[in-house]
Length: 132
Image (spheres, rainbow, N blue to C red):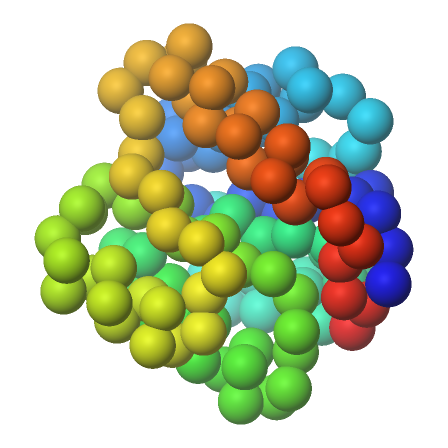
């Protein structure tokens, strides 16, 4: 088990990646990694072993549900928080059924991104995270 040292943001929208990065970096104390291609993200998770992943759902190559299903199928326990523009209950249910550890709707402003990042870091920073 480990404390939060690194977080990987996976989103194909570069503006969202920028806002998420700024929001998480404003908290400090851990490395913020980013990836805009879901296929590359899988390899980065396997090799770099981030302590926490923030994962978008709708991406062009492999969607977030599939990324999560592949990770869990490999037995990878990395905590994954889905961050999506969709707040449809069907997507939320599917995310949890696929093995996510949390689900948040994408914020509308940089301040909202900061609030969301703070809530995620506060929650996951309270306990030891699984090592994979």
